[in-house]
Image (cartoon, rainbow, N blue to C red; front, side, top):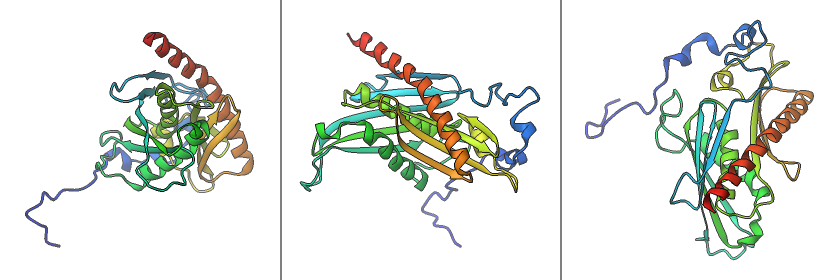
Length: 268
């Protein structure tokens, strides 16, 4: 097919050569060594080190920055602002979330255009955060949340839930409670909490069920606001995975409180 000489014709996406290696296949020795530890010297139920801070974006009403291992997420919150729609049926406020991956966030270099995965994650973020916010307090108004994944080394979506919740709190949006995100990867009877990008990309051989679960938990209400599951898993494994993720969220919640208290103390 002839190309248009007036345009800069280039490949829209490129792939890292590691993508074509055989390391993505399931190998018990590759996942867990002889000492029962993962490749980064963690136990199966150990989360990675986490760092969080609010008030990063000065021009935003509220913002947050989170590092979970090598995963880096930044979030900015604006509003409430008046809805542009003339529909008078909006008796409650509206949340708008936009999640994007930076072009350098993964080994696969992406374009700036939003893809289907980012749109799906943005919609699930609204589902995870809407039960936490008092939408009745700003009727016919909208709160905008913009999330950028600077580096994705696994658990990017779960980290985005936590970052968005912190940004809402930093913006002074009235909330019932904070939402905490957590996820896991399952290979048969093997469950890995807070998986890295390498563990998320692994696929199971034939005869072994592999699945991934992400959960958003509201600590003060003891409720799950959103849950998504991909891959193959039975009811018992899903139940055990949910309980493990809830316990992980309970450990992260005091860190979020400490981060917000430190921010308020700094401002006053």
